[in-house]
Image (cartoon, rainbow, N blue to C red; front, side, top):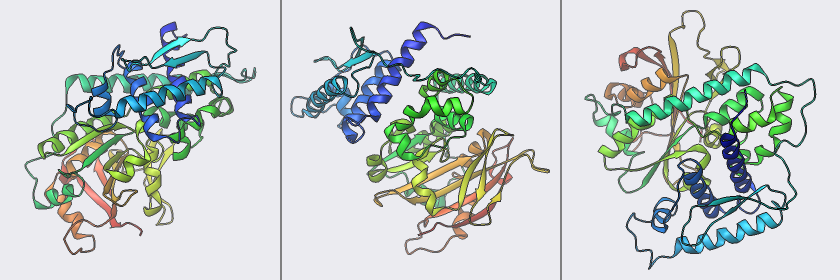
Length: 423
């Protein structure tokens, strides 16, 4: 089964953008990196022909949607810097790139063109040994990834699900969410990176947040994939897919409706486009686990729960490292129809706001988590099991909850434990 030429061209362009973002010219300049990624994604994911200054100022630099571009030249200044960085990259570190990127003046939509008379350096640096053949697991996983992407697209086309808020909402629910959703500040909803999670599952090679953020893991794809018996080119193609799990997407829609009803400014962000600057300045809701959403990793030192991947069952499950690595692997006798979700509330990286972490064994457990966080009785029980605070707010904590996998009603969940987070 071969990929069509259009798919290959799109992959080549996406890989080029990812290499640029991870290069020394961009990985230490968050503003320019964000600008490059936003502009490129508008062209590659949305086929944008024109991108206007006011849109970029609003989406990338946080200006109001109707700000005066004549009085504020932040986009023009950074676009000029971006053009110079691109020229330097393609003249040095990227001298062997087949494609080059140009940002035309007056229109910020990047133009991709084939470089003429240039030495080329293909993505796959070494041919596969004769003994290495594409693993059937990759094809199964790739097909699954397509289904996830299709399911996510269908969800977006159909519109948001029912809001997370319910008739059971009360004082404790409002108190809890007031620590995350605040009218006077931004809350980022960061959905997981399903493709990168799948890459780690297939190769058994975990990625650190540093590798993920600066894209340095892309350079290791040929050797890591070959060692796992995967075709490096296909592995690279998989990693480039921008997709999230259906569970996270559904949860996000419900959450965004709830935030909108409370007048909160929320940003829906894909994990690959997030930054340390955002996690220091904003409130955030991080969905997924340390593999599928590496932005969770900086907070794991304060938590006992680690989410592990079971290859045999092809599922993630929670492990309690504070209790002799006790495993909560689903599918054990008597637990065939049960799942788990974890909730953690912690200060953000800058200790200027709060971060809410939501992880689950699957879609049903994620739905149960959404209902749990909107149910007065459930949150009141959780609050009662935590230390008192002067203002009655929720202290930093983590909780693990067991849920019926085919039902999301709050009375069909049971708390396994709820405890303060480490200092």
